[in-house]
Image (tube, rainbow, N blue to C red; front, side, top):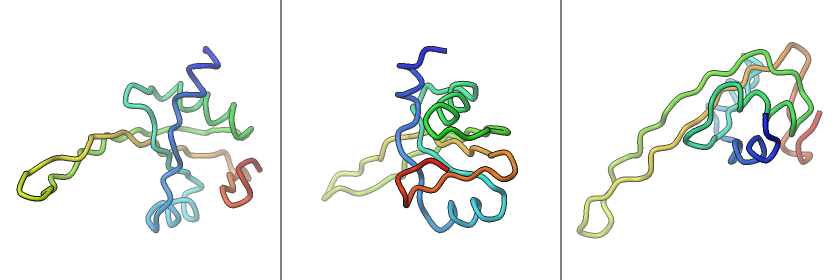
Length: 100
């Protein structure tokens, strides 16, 4: 796969209470990814950037919420997130700047 494309697939880690719970329980990490990203691209990007072994990837589309902006009803953007399951013993630590 093209390394330039892999560098653009991952947008940001999704850090929340739910993401922390999933990381502790299932050895998974959640990322916000590009809207046109595929499972093999996400797997390649995580392995390239963080130097960890990826077991599997699940992708979910998150629909944007309807919100009111003043008098006008609007909608937030729809986005995509990826649940990356790591091999046993692997871990990504975002506090220390990534890596193992």
